[in-house]
Length: 163
Image (cartoon, rainbow, N blue to C red):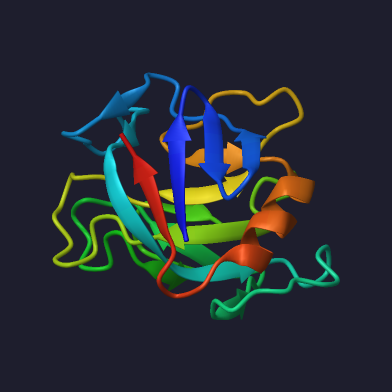
């Protein structure tokens, strides 16, 4: 199943889901910290989720429980760049265990992995949107109800097309 992002909506099957994207729009030349959502076709690597907040999560994708010490390296000088890490960590990294709910469910997109290129962008996810669908730092975000619907439909062949 392919999901297409167009005009701040995700389209798949007979669904049209509102989403938010990067504060500065889209780019086919994504750079770390540019607040742009990368253009391209991306597979879903796996799901990260907060077991304490998400009781039931049905999906054919691999699921990984977010722990309090988990993060994602965004340090372009680190050999762990664009990889999941554990705190304490020497270098810059984003926390995955947050007070707000945007990272309660995270679909990790296969962006900048094969190979990982420094400064090309890290932590590109499909995650939960803030209530007002506030722009992201480069990710795609949808509401919780729609996320649960989406993850129940995905499989290993599913792709997100951002054009």
